[in-house]
Image (cartoon, rainbow, N blue to C red; front, side, top):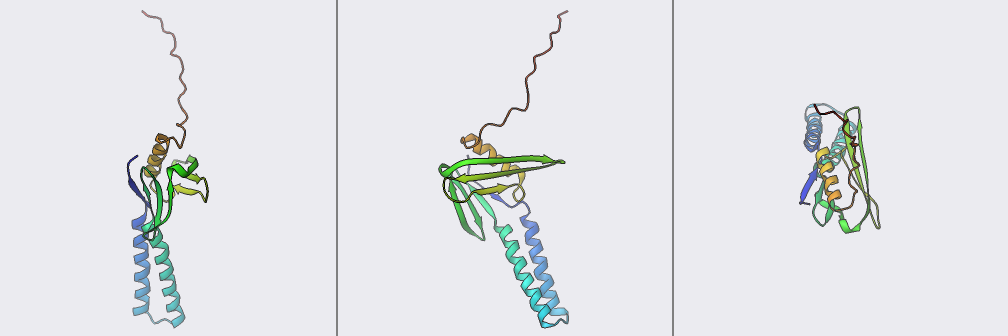
Length: 156
């Protein structure tokens, strides 16, 4: 398992959304004749959007040979060593051509850590599944191919 950082798939979209909200609030404050309550409401919404967007812009999971850590707002919120993981749940689905993958890491004590392709890129989550199988935290994937004997063909 090599060290890597998993980041939100749409971090750039979240960052640009926050910048657009801030620009709209500044535009309304400077160029629009608004009552004070509307101006303060816009400022409050701008602050809320900034907090929301910064969570996803700074969200990342750092994976290493020792474990995984969850970071947001530029600080580590949780670190889980592989030796502390008691069991791992894997949910994979492919509904109407949209694949998703969710991993739930259950430690011996404390709350589970959920890693989902709803936020992270699907390839990164599937790569983590492969790593979890390599270190023995997940069983090997079920074989989807059943071997059928070849039909007997007479030699000519």
